[in-house]
Every structure is written in structure tokens, then in C-alpha cells.
Length: 375
Image 1: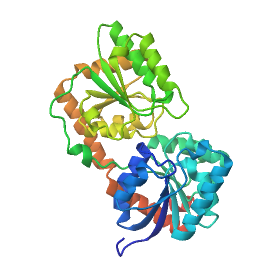
Image 2 (image 1 turned 90 degrees about the vertical axis):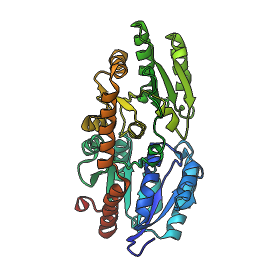
Image 3 (image 1 turned 60 degrees about the horizontal axis):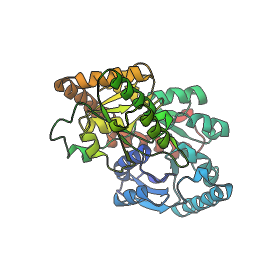
Image 4 (image 1 turned 135 degrees about the vertical axis):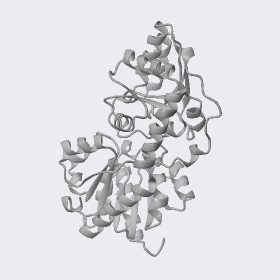
């Protein structure tokens, strides 16, 4: 911590896994640590290990999937968090996912300012039903689409649009050695209906009907107690396209898979931002997203760095896939360059850390329940 440190911040990361929100926080921690004394409370596991390697003070706290456990487990977790607050004596708590806001508010009491980082559209209804937006001194929205939804549900006070940071260092050192096959695509993300993997299978079937063959690598796994992955595999068999799909499961490092794909398929029904779009650009791969998806459609449309399909149907997605297959390499390179330029202008970790620092500082100055004054 340098001589300009403004204070202590305790960050609560409730899942401790390595999905988009956790990766975004990891990119944000190094520039924040230049000016803040940061302690992260999170479950032990992949995220805790990665944060510790960056030099962050980590306090392993409770377990993943706490929201699926009983009241006693949540109470125990809140008491452990309260103990961490007592030991660290932070001037502010930053909750990295809104689902932990209730636990955080209970542990923090009335005097500690809380900033809530929202990453799902359903976060705002969750906060409203529990009155937690009144406890927050600031609510972070990761896209304009998210901020618009937050304003609709919660009102416009104390909202901040702050794009998630993205550090391209890892992929920038491992570029494509040769162009991948134009028929090879990739879908990265948790296997669930909202992510639209069933739509991809329908599009492959439609393309097959037209005499066009494409293959898709699916990187990701289902949520606990979900059988959606089995439903998808059965659907691929029913559509007679099982030889055109590959199920790779969850992978911490997707670099080689992205480098080997012609385009990223991201047909989510609703997505706050879509970090995988950034990873695709960084790997020299164009993203294909649905126009109503929120964050992904926002960044792809504003950047001009990909393909946006109009209807949430297999036929519409199939047409977008054919467009990508027919696209000249020079045009693909132009789209990727536009995407990378967007990343540099809007997702630089140092710039976003600076903006977040200003929000933290104002919250600490104004107190735990100040709202519109910190805009």
C-alpha cells in the first residue's frame, strides 16, 4: 500500500468460483491495490488462490453456493463476516455480487457504507423486495442496459454505470498461428436455458437441412442439480447432429479453444455484459449475439465488432452463422480490430479502478445511507 492510500476496503466475493464476475474482480484488484488497503472475504478455492497470487489479503469465509444452504449456515457465515469486519476495520464494504447483499448488510450493521456491484438483471428485483437498495450508498451497473433496468425497478438515485475491466495480457501473448476452419464455432458459458445453447442446436439442424455443415464446441457445465446438460445432449441426438457438437465441460483456461474457433456463438436471452465477448475479440474471434440480449448486444453494436442477429430463432441464428462463414478474412480482421479498440477505450482496468475509487471515496465521506449526493 502506498503513501496515498485512501483507506481500507473489505470486498465480499460470495461464490469464489471463476466465472465472469470473479475474473472481472481479479483484473480490477491490482490497480485498486495501488491506492487502497484491500481485504477479500471469499470461500476457499480457485478465486481465493488467484487473488492471493496477486498479493491480495484473503480471508477464506464460508463456502460456495451459500444461498442454497439453510438459515443456520447463512447465520454462521454472517457471524464469520462480522468477525472479519471487526478485525479489518474497513471504511467500506464492496459486495461483488448482489446475492450477498443481505448477508453483508446484516454483518455490517448500520454504520459501515456498502457498495453493491450488480451483475444480473434479476438483482434489482431482489434488492427491491428486501429494501437493500436503501442500505447501499452506491449501486454499480455493468452496462447501460443494466442501469436502465435498475432505474426502472429501483429509481435513478445512487446508480453508476461502470463497465467491467478486462486485462487482455494473457491472450495477447498467444495469437492464432493460422486461421481456423470456417465451419468451427464455439459457445462458452454455463449450460442453462437463458444462455441459449438449445438455440444453437436448432441452428445447426437448420443449417444441415440447407446442406451446410458446421460444428460447435460447448465449453461450460450445468448448475448444480440441473439436468440441462443432459437435455441438450438428448436434443442433439433427436436432431441427428450429435456428431457436430463437442461437450468440453467447464475449463478455467479457454484460450486455445477460442483461438481455434471461427466465431463465438453467444445467443443469451439476457446478459448483463458478457465477458466472453471480450475474450473472443482478444483471441481474434468475432462474436455473434442476439439483438435483445442486453450487455452483449450493447457492446457489439456500439463497437461494430461483431454480428448481431435479430430474432431469437434457430433460423435467424443460422443465417448469422452463414454470414460469418462467408465473411472475407479482411472483414473479420476489421471487426476484431473494432472490438479490441472498444476494449482499450472502455474496459481498461486502471481507468475503471480510478472511477470506482472515486465512488468509494465519496461513499466513505458521505456515510452508509447517502444516495443521490454521491452521483
